[in-house]
Structure formats: C-alpha cells, structure tokens
Length: 428
Image 1 (cartoon, rainbow, N blue to C red):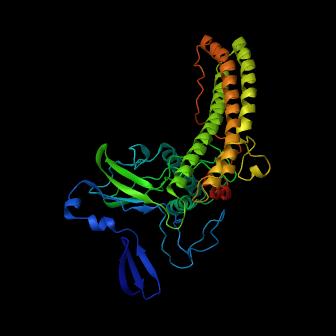
Image 2 (cartoon, rainbow, N blue to C red; image 1 turned 120 degrees about the vertical axis):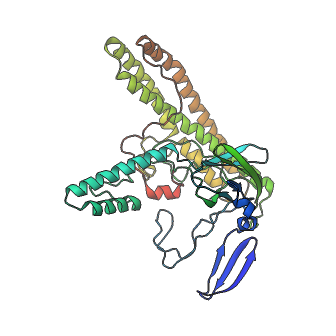
C-alpha cells in the first residue's frame, strides 16, 4: 500500500499507509550508529536504547482465534504486526556467522544478573536428537507401509515441525513437564538483536513440577542503570549501559518498586529451597534404588531395611513440601497444594501491580517460610540420622556412598504436561 507519511518519534520509525494503518519499526538506534567503520570490524555492540519497565505481550490486536489463558492463538484473521515484547533490545554486529556469542546483563553494582549464549543448552540438544530419531522412525514406518520415501520424509518433517500427533498414535506433548530452555543469542552474519525480558534468574525447578496459579519465574529488575557486556569466542568485545525506566502510567515510587523486588527475590529463594528439598529427596531415593540392585545376601537385607526407614521418613517431608500426587495440570483441583506452591503463588500476588507488597502478603510469607524451615530441619535430621549407617554398609560392600544433593531425576511415572496450566503458570 502507499506510504503517505513517515515520522520518527523516540527513536521509532512510523509509517502511515493508505490502508489506514500505522506500522512502526521499533528502535532504529542501531541504524543511527551503523557506519563503514563498524561493518569493517569482526564484531560490534551497539549502545541499547533505554527501555520502559513494561511488558507488552508481543502480540498485536486482531491476531485471531480466541487467544487467552489456556487457549492457543489461532492464525491471524488479517496480517498484523507483532507488538514489542517489552524490555531492552540489544543489537550487535557480526561480520561472519557461527561465532559463540555471550551477552551478560549486569546491575549498577557490577554484579552479574544473567547471561545468555548462542550455544544450545544440553537439554535442548538432547531433545533435538530425540526428535530427529522419532522423525527417522516415522519415515521408516511410512516407507514400510508403501509410501514413497520422498513423500514420507516431507510428511514426517512437517508433522515434527507442527508438533502434531505421531502417525502411530500417542501425543508427544504428554511428556514430563519441563522448564523452557533459555532464549539463545543469535549469531548470524550482519545485524543481530536480543530482547532481554528484564527477569532475574528463576527459582529452582524439577521434572514433573506441577503448580496451581504459581510458577518459578524470577523477579523483574527494578528501575535503574544496567550494563550489557558482549563476549565473542571468549573475548570481551565491550559493554554498553542503558536504563530501565519506571512505567509512566504508575504512581509507584522507586522505594515501592525496590521493596517489591526485594520481596519477590525472597519468594524466589524460598521456592528454590523448597524445590531443592524435593529434588534432594528424589535423588537419594533414586540412589537407594540403584544401590539395592548391586548388593546381595545379608548386606542386601540389612540395606533394604535401613533404606525403607529412610524412604518413609523422607517421603513425609517431601509430601509436606510438594503435592506428590500431582501427575497432570488438573490434579491440584483434587489434591491440596503444599508449601512450595503456596510460597511461589505469593510472587503472583505481590507482582500483580506496580506497588510494594501489602502487609497481608508479607505476614502470609513469614508464616509459610517458618513452616518451610521446620520441614527442612526435619529433612536434615532424617538424613543426618539415617544416611551414615547406610553409607557404612555401602563402603563395606565397596560401593559408592550416597551424597545428598538437589539433582534432577526423571519425573514420576504417569506425569504429563498440561497446556492450559502451562499458559497460566509461565510453562511450569
């Protein structure tokens, strides 16, 4: 359509069209800084534009079919642009593709908040291998049924890309609930960009974690001055500062937002403590099962007796911290939520507005935190009391001792993901 006018406002390029639309190219600051000297370099970090501490959601109006809590968005009814997601956009130049790029976000005190890399994380890499193997199996199965190889490959790869049900049946999405991988930093040749969501690190989580009206997402950074540092192939390219500015629509003071941030960090850390306790229990149980398979005779009988007592006492604490009956996103409707869920839900309460946490919220937090301390003390006592004798038996049998730690283990059998819950709780 004809573009009848152009305007630049606050660093955005706005185009007015004859189709009665406004199209906005957000943040042209990198174009203003781009020079032949920059493109002659192997890599370059542009100074980011200051950003408001707001989240726009990343979807334009008119995006189509019933997008809401628990409802997947349908295809656009009309062509629409994507709204900005909120937070600062970091733009950088790479002369050649394929470099390992790391972006580090640092607070005003020089402390690292979070880093992101162009490398694929191990879980995503493993998933990629698994998906490739499933795709190959589908192709072979269709070829065996008489479908031409080229058609089978197109169909299988399209099915994998769309996340559809496998040809042989069985929904691949019905797997253990897993934390989404961190966003990867782009490393193509030319100008790249990365949008920081302003979040501090998440709370600890574990496979199969199911919460109701809660999640493990870290708190949003408060207004202030921050720095992004770029590292390419292990060498620092440089750093640039930017500001997160308070939402101009709110009357909250800087003190209010700092109080909110401090409280949300406490909630995050307590959620981590609770989830790590569950992970520790499950790790020890998995190790007990492993060692039982390697013992024989009298040593096995002695070990099984001690292991049974340890399992039983740890399970009482585990079930007090986490609802162990949860297997799907709807189970919290049938089984009461436990301490980790109650604590994590406070993040949604305190973070639902631009304001300091209310007195009621802090009082509830203090009560739940005290209960958690009691359960953690019980778990420590159980482990300190029961595990030494078990490790003595293992040493005598020349088997590795069991060292408590919050390590990941597979989700309990039957645990499935739930798309509606994922939408409500940021995928956790």
